[in-house]
Image 1 (cartoon, rainbow, N blue to C red):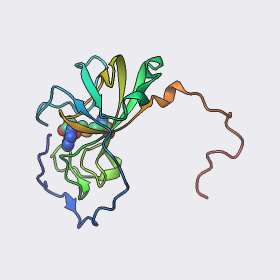
Image 2: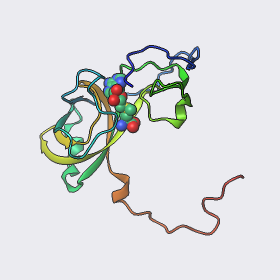
Image 3: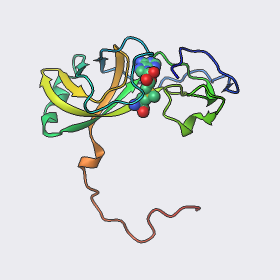
Image 4: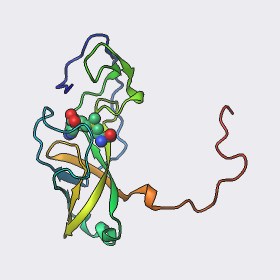
Length: 164
Ligand code: SAM
């Protein structure tokens, strides 16, 4: 269920430490049809509405070559989220989960990610489908979808060991 900023039964908020400045810059903004969390989808769909990712100056030329990729990963800042819950109930049904076991927008650093389909570019603006954020959400980064890349080296014996 959609949350404004309330705390629900059995949820746990903590005194979050003061923010440190990691030097992040918002490189653009995302234009979507959704102005309310009541109507915003929980995850994007590739047959969803066309959205615009507008890069601020001077970042437009950083898009050069992007048309080669049909899918992109977009990272954005869920700027209207609270940031202090460690246990939360997204469905507001009494079931609580640790924040890092969820894709909820409520997290200490409210970074959202979506894999989007690129349908066009107009100078410093990308036209995409597959987003799930509110109109005017700040943009953090854009990368080609990682699944379009193959690993440079094949897995070696001993890779991926756990418990060390
Ligand atoms: N796809 C991203 C992910 O998995 O990292 C975000 C998933 S999150 C469940 C999507 C929800 O975040 C939306 O349904 C909406 O309720 C909320 N949301 C979207 N944009 C937001 C914003 N700018 N600030 C706060 N909440 C936002």
